[in-house]
Image (tube, rainbow, N blue to C red; front, side, top):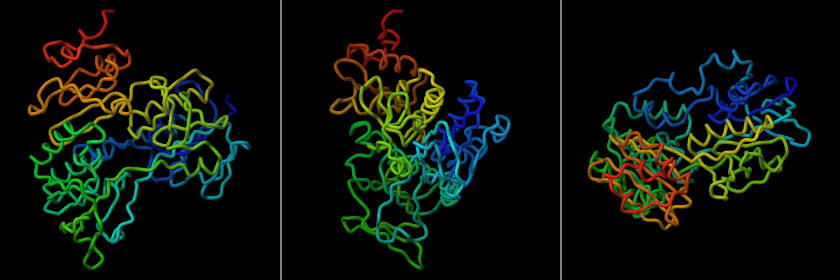
Length: 412
């Protein structure tokens, strides 16, 4: 095993976690992590939350301490990328032209921000949001306040960026294709809760609406024209309309692609000795029996661990309950579960939305398949147990705050 070379294409959370896991599991061979950015692997959640709001410094963003890679003999290639891979020959070619052999390959290339081909999208003051540098730039643009900001996109990132922009004292207008922000993700009632939260802090919504054109003066954005013809003043325009899995390397290598790289529950691709993890992987989940592609940090974190163990020949599966969180103004929300199983389900609310502290649960066949916590503490363990245990629940007791969640679980 000490003569093997594991190559990791992608320098995000999944790639860094895989490298750390390989070493902690005793792998003594060569490890190379190829990072397209000139940044050591970093966490993405702080980019739209604590770091963007100035509540955390740059030193809190890296996945691992800067010295870890050298101390653990992990080769980190910054500003480089894997341009091509030949799974049969067990070789890759880097963008610089260098060829490298591998015994195992992990593709953790992540995703790229979806771009809208709008007239005026090339003007100064128009940006997408994905990288550490994007967050640095947006923080600089927002921190002085007093600007007109148009946010295009009513998903989680768009809402977090709108909250940050408003918190800095900017005038924010958000456009989205949904009738209610976050409606596709959590339904109209809970999406309405987040809309009201934003409106209380001055954020304006145009829903459903889309941008038809960005106009400018002197090469810089000055307004967004909506599909209804409304002209919205804009010193800054941020497109936050989702991401697209970066599958180019995998496609060229002949791997199976379907909404990302198709992998089994151990994150193995259609080619022996090649795994995929993180945003780019469409993984079979043992709980649902379906493939899921998740863009949340928990998936990248756990996926990196599973892929590393799978490459070492261990019995590992990505079977944890999916998780993500968001912070917007004075609301901290956590979500566990399977959004694909919540379709058509009206959430059971435990508590009062107007008090900014409640739980919400989605059921299928009488059992909880997803749960959401708003400004609640110490609920993660019972909520995850309800979901993973497929435990039938009484809806009235589930909705009653006087009934401890632990009492809904079977006696141990």
